[in-house]
Every structure is written in structure tokens, then in C-alpha cells.
Image (tube, rainbow, N blue to C red; front, side, top):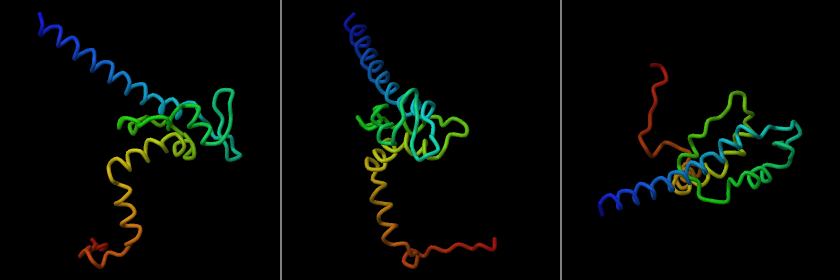
Length: 125
């Protein structure tokens, strides 16, 4: 009986945790499906309009550390790049920092030459 209670507690804890991640996932997806570019450099969603910062604040995209699954949000067909960039901004930057990819980018940005690494490409093949 005690084992059953422990298993029930663990299942409930996992369900609550996964549910929280699903809610976070949906923020990016909801942004992607709701926001549209207004043609003047701004954005519109529902009855509101404003800058990308306003979009992020309205959808709560930067209020938390997004789960890795936010990177899997589906981008609707013909969504403007400015909307994709705005909705994924916090998710991308958060995970770039957490995975150490900012340091990799900065290294290659500062050292763009390949002379040191025996890097060769045969373009004729």
C-alpha cells in the first residue's frame, strides 16, 4: 500500500511538472499563431499592437526560463521572419546561454580564419 502511495505521488509530481512545461511551450506557439506583422515595423495581435518588446511582455515569453521544448514550437506557414524572430527570441537566447553556444559563437566571430585548424574543403567534388 505504501508503494502505491509513493508511485501515485511521483506520478502526480511528474504530471504537474510536465504540465507546467507544456504551458510554457504553448507561450511560444501561441505567439507564433497570434501575432502578425503590421507592415510598418510593428506587430499586431488580437486587439493590441506594439513593438516586439510589447509582444514578449504580453505573451510572457521572457518572464521565465523556457523549457527546451520551446524550440520545437511549430511555425505556421507563411509566418513573417520578423514574427518568428520576435516569438523565439527569449527561447533561443536562453538556450544559447545555457548550452554555452554564445561562447562558441563569440570565439568564431573573433577568429574567422581557418588557417589554424587544417580545415580544407574540396569544392570540385
